[in-house]
Image 1: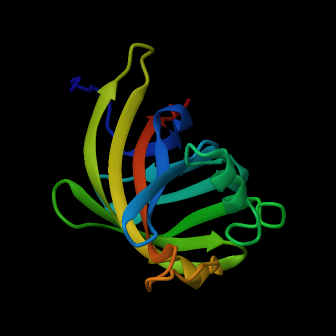
Image 2: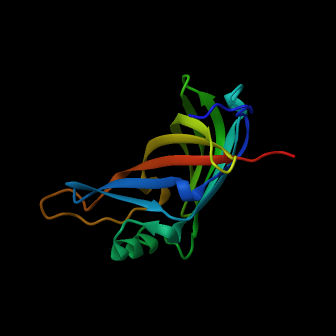
Image 3: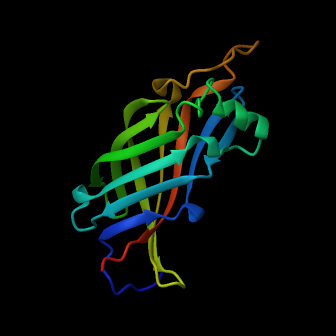
Length: 185
């Protein structure tokens, strides 16, 4: 980690090319399918001295869903799942932030999927700060939370012959965040 001469509190922009917003769902009750979104944008104000003053916003382009399988990705884009044609974005806007301990921060906010907004809470581990070769101050966080996809109208499923369903209702959301500090003039 690089020694920094500037304070870390400030405004940040998500570095989408070095961040990942992903998900994990159980498939056929026996394995996990992982995916992510390739197009995302976000901003945050991070206040290390008073975390309650921190806030963040994230926008995900639904059509950029990527599970490594084109046929599955098309199914996820249609109305059975995300309905990307009618709801092209997933958004998150924080409503509260707090420090849990020295390296963990809890962010609560409104997650909107398919036009339905529900609160979610994510615990983020602060993974470090560095100055990159271009002089940018970078900050990293990792977090996960589990949601029930049916709460957001993502309800399609199919019963399995031996019992159970094809896709789990519980979905783990994964956040690997790299953000760049915006220098104020």
